[in-house]
Image (cartoon, rainbow, N blue to C red; front, top):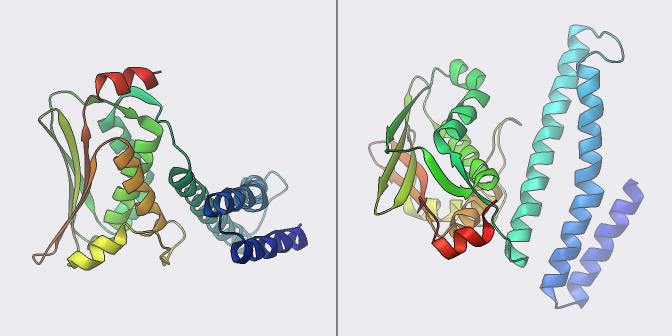
Amino acid sequence: MYKDTHSNCANLCTEIINNTDLKDLKKSFIEILTHDLKTPILAQIRVLDMLVDGKFGEMNAEQAEMLQLTLESCNYMYTMVATLISTYKFDIEDIDLNYSHFNIIKIIEDTINLTKDYLTENNIKVVIIPEIKNPIVAGDAVRLKKVIQTLFFNSINSAFKNSIMKIYLSEFDNNLSVKFESRSGYISSEKIRKMFQFHTCPTKKYDKIGTGIGLYLVNKIIEKHRGRIIAESSITQTNVLGFEIPKEAIDKFYYENCV
């Protein structure tokens, strides 16, 4: 399997040199990512899950810890590959959004619950400030959940310990705004601009989502919703990440994609 993977990658590099059709190359790259990376990683995760759950017998503490770290590593890699595939699809395909009505506060609360241990460990408190009449909005719930998780994870990853994160929800002119305000180091305007460009960025822990590919995809999803990304930093060490989208999609656009 590894020999075939290396061969596929080598063939792709050769095509890049000899072929100028970048769209076809990107499609080939997606196929390689999906079949040669994503599928095997998913199989590894399933086996590791069973091992960690003791399905094949008990383990000592050291063995359990090593398996858990390996599982976290595989989950991190799977997330990165899945994000990369989604990003390339947004670039080369006309992606249709799957519109529905959903409770955006519920998605935010579920996202916060995913990080309880990290928040407790770093003594970061999260406060939701809903300045909206109704939490029900129209959009692609699955993709906007990805947006919310990525922006929230990036915000808490850089937030100071023993600080408070405020999540503001507001509406004006039929637009919905979601902002994650955290206490963290100042970010220059140039660095903010680069945060949403396509590149990878290493992280210190596998359970953290770094900037780069994730934020680039976030920007693409919000643009597809006909909205805009919000990214601000103050020298008072207050940073804001968020987005603004129409609370109700344009009628024709909505009903053509409504489920």
